[in-house]
Length: 580
Image (cartoon, rainbow, N blue to C red):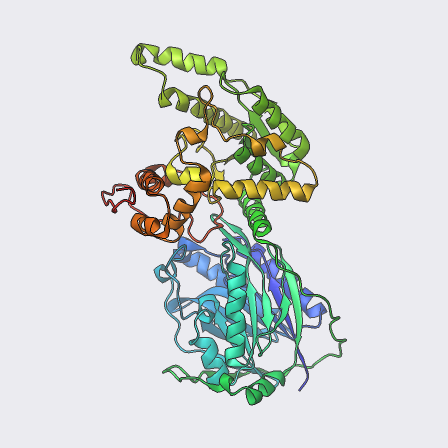
């Protein structure tokens, strides 16, 4: 049997832009055809974008998606395409559409609908029933959708063992978090070796609101060996030639591939695709498989992709950022410049009597090194006017957090005025450590449209900044910013550590509480300082009202504040504290 050339078309669609997404699919389909592909595979929900959320409740949107799918199917002359689209025939399903030689050949509905973390698929979709395999000139393949391959049984096992599939195609829109790519590859390699079949995994790439999709499409051989890997955080066309006889040899030599417990839906139906004429083509040139990015670099790339897509897909011409001369605003500005180009970033320094000369110098130096627009708008006179207006009411009450918070609220007002005047989106600069414990000012430093580092703990902020400087080969972010104690500069000689534990102590507690769901007592048992645990968890619990009012930002941890974290604001539950 002749070899099969596979093309994984790793695309960045936009939710709701059905026409634009279809054009992307057709362009990639033509590129796959020129490359001599027999089968072209696209991500889950590529026609609609993912997740389309309540757009799925609009009949006209569903009709547009299905019309788009039919248009794609009509352009598959001479090859087979597998792509994702919402499909309504009685029930609404999350579908993998199989098109062949210019016509629709079949619809496979997603069976395992995730309804945890950021997912709400049970809200919209009916559960798929059964599955099918497709016979293309004697080469049998099965199709599944994202979650369906994450478990040892289910559709892929049924297709391999009950349907004789030699290739298991999975179309996916799998959101990124730190380290997920490595665990996902391990899982897919296991599915391939357990089932004695090729596994082809096509993942979406791009940013959508709080989610970032990392691409990283892969092909594994029936022995679990990696054959091809797509780029991370970029569109890509991944080509791979498959030896159709290899799965048979694998199954003969390794009887473990034949161990399978049939379930009720264990014998997929088989659909035979019409013969298509093959073409003479040269084998693909052998080349190295791209290496995976390091953990810090992949986080940086995710933040750049998420920020760039949010701004561009929302139609903003650029962004503006309040530059304090501190580490958070410096990293945010660097990410924005990389995501959008420095010409589309405006930095504004807004000093008061408490702002040091060093901070203003560092903000200006950062802007010059990044090549972004920079302005200074002194707000001391505005601050004095606020204090004067409030003095009859405040009387002789001492200066406290009230006067501190007036300053960021003035800055937030000015940034939003610039946004209105120039159409630029305001990027907020708070990190996950601050967001978690409420170390922020409502309607002040939380004012804006997108929170670039809201899921980045403070300690990781420093690691990302050092990595970016290393890539630049110079102190793009001034060295003084990296070494001085973090401070909000809202009162004389202020440091973050006056109000919070040191970040090296705070961040592990925050990660254990939020990302691992560990109780305060469990953290103490693990060896964490009880007083720090008590202090941090209390702050997290009582600041939900602030987090609920913060703008979206890209998810890069296993559990981010936002869709991942859904606690009631009015909430009297009080866990036993570690410090008691």
